[in-house]
Image (cartoon, rainbow, N blue to C red; front, top):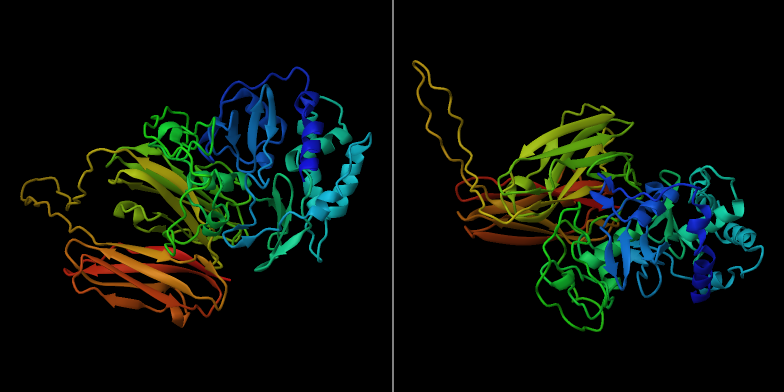
Length: 558
């Protein structure tokens, strides 16, 4: 494997200069993208992005430029770019010492196969032609009766009209550019053991993913996965387990110097603000991280799921503009845009949340909620049912969050056939500061002749409820643990859950009496009997018969 990695690096080292159109200046201005709220501010990275097909090939930027192990780098959804002098190179993300990923959110990717690597062509005067023949042999367009189009996907990685704008097309050089993007194959095609409609092939720098439901082939967003490993945010449980002992695992910590949890494991690295959206200045950390740990972060607590279960893997490719965009996947043909008018606000400040959904079959409803933020204003399920099967549906909500912190907001839609989209996630930060007490009151009418004054009446503080799934996606016949956590200063009467709009008797209403406890927790183990996607709806009632704002988490049974 090392041999072919070095060979690829040698052959493409000078390609940036070789194929840059004559007279095209390096782009010095920032390129900012609403899809992820990150910008490309390093001129060399901006030029490389423009010359390699942009977001279609690399995905959108998901970090700032920062120093990683002695080099300036920037993360994109599919790749990580590295600046070496004035040249841009790509990290071999799937190398064993970086991201040796074989599992993520129950997806199982093929492992590297030394026999495949041994077939790689040797350097020669006909190397480009030999690479084409080799790729065509080990990356077929058809596999097990499915049109996986792996060879075509490799050949189309860098659009010829972009690479050779204003110059004569060179097919051999185009092959080497495509090789620069993907590297060489390191496995044969292989179907996912739990989903035959997903077929993967591993390359040095990416994983091709064929989805039979749409007949499409795109790259897994491995850059997103490495970001999740470093930050620990939205990190799938099986990927976290696989990355135990990694020098990258959960390094990102804003309270520490260079925002590094274990600086001894990542020398010559500065993560300060690396994954903070926008370009505004950030506060440097001052605490001292662990000097040496021998690699890897602390293991996650056993049997403690992240609220809402393991999040789905990153979608294949964002669509049109929006703060966060979900591209159609196997579960739905719906595109979701989740937009907020400001991603950094003060407690009590008004925030406008906009959801835009598109589906050629028609939209039933759209909704959004905070992902277990602890702020009932955000965690409330905000749903708009007025889409009326239109192919485009949009709605605005104005809310006033009161709790300080960094939170995930997520949105989705359901089409007229009852198919729910995947969640689309964006991040909101609420500054530390005095937290206003939410005391909604009855409006006071304008006083006129004969008009009595209405005394404002505070509304009771609502109890809160959380729903935690041990797994958000299971196979039919498997069990899932559903945990409900309720809180109320007044004491709770009961907590409960059920499957919203589900006809599965296993997901009928389950209630637990709390005996006036301020915090009430109960877990149920159930075994769903029907396939499909269902919302698990959690509820609570306090001793004064005040009900919580219902919250929901999606459970998928395959």
